[in-house]
Image (tube, rainbow, N blue to C red; front, side):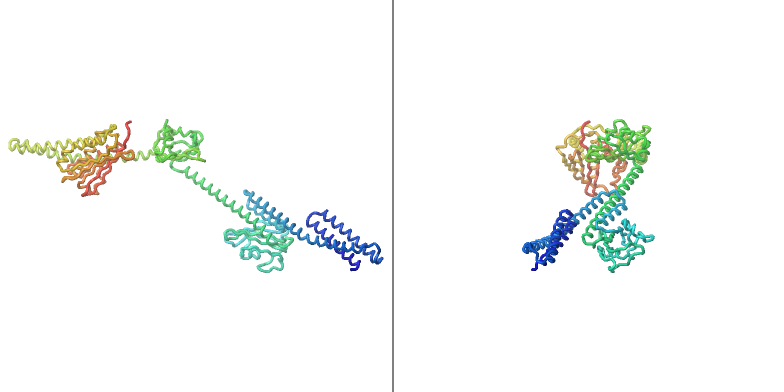
Length: 627
């Protein structure tokens, strides 16, 4: 190879190496190092140019080493090739660095979005749009929200440069989808549109209005939620073409914005619902006709509603924060109420259901109330009590009226029954007495028979008046602990002759573990005699009479069962009414007296009967303790 060609090729490689070094200084940011390398290579190229010029003037000058120049050529070629080969590496590193910077910018933008929990919709939209324009290195942009029926878009934010560059007169903020061009296509297709040559793009484009900023490149991204497009962002005029990285960065940012807006809306809706429920509860409490009082653990009254004001005569201002809940009860009653709340007997521990007590009005009047209350807990700690109470004065007055009416009705029935029961035997007694008086010596035997009838009727009247007196002059029982089984056996023994006479078989099934029971022996003996006589009279042709006693769950049951004729269903509801009887000569007071005695013992009496089969009467008593 000619020497001048070697020098010329070396110069070309060295100039190329210097150029590549200068470019690398711009890519890598390591300016001084690459510039020094470029300077060194440039000096080598200058040296080669001077040598080549001297060669052309002198023609094969002495002292030049052809081998050394060939080595220099090889070194220059290798240097230029090496610099050319590492440029893509640095370009890739630069792109990675740029991508990392964009990711960091996006993360920072998302982080800032998450902190905008109290920001307005306009502030969030403005920030999101400016961040999106910056992330995609665009110049123009807008952000709009799509209506629920996807018929129109309302632009919420324009980028600053749009506001400066756009000269559209009376620019609207609401745009119908049916008349839309490219942004409408993005909504209809539900996918992003990347347009890097706006002038050449034709699909769906309808052009720009007069005065609109010029568009070179365009990126449109719809935001979807539950298969519905809810928002749209457009950015334009990036210096380089838009790519999938721009689409991805902007999509992530917009999704973050929509998540924040949805959370704000949920919180706003929840807050509104809580406020509505609070107002509703407050109105419900304050307008309730029942009294409602709430107090803290120390008894300080916190809530005193209109119902409580009406019942007790206080105003809310006179009570809340000024009166302790203990002061609205008579002395000692507040302690009893509190004890009842903690007791399991009135609705369970921590609750009180339909508990009757009294409160004091503003004037000191004792007002009977029905109280239901609950303890209030927070984090398993008792913090207060809320009570709902109802004025019982009207109910008590009504009960008295009903009781009075019942008493008058009973008195009327009693008068009619007594009149009937006394009138019939008196007529017999009077008639027989006059006959005996008028025919004293005529027929002694007949007169004796009439006198016997008079005596029998008088005895029946005496027994009837005794029963009436027992019912009307009822004495409270004197209860003592006793052996109920022994009382049953003693009473049955009194009736043994009648049982034998009527061919009735007696069966006793008494619980030997009954133990002592609290009762009045004379009262309960009267109940047993009455029930046993009823059983005897129901079995005119003989039968079986069974008496059973049992103890269960703190109570004692006693059953008297006969196999008599039974009671018709239509008479069952009247059996315990005073003066109602199914017997020809009954007083109608027996079962009524039994019921009254059982009630006085805090017990119960229940009767079931089947015509033609028999009757069962069950007595239930609390076992009780001597007090």
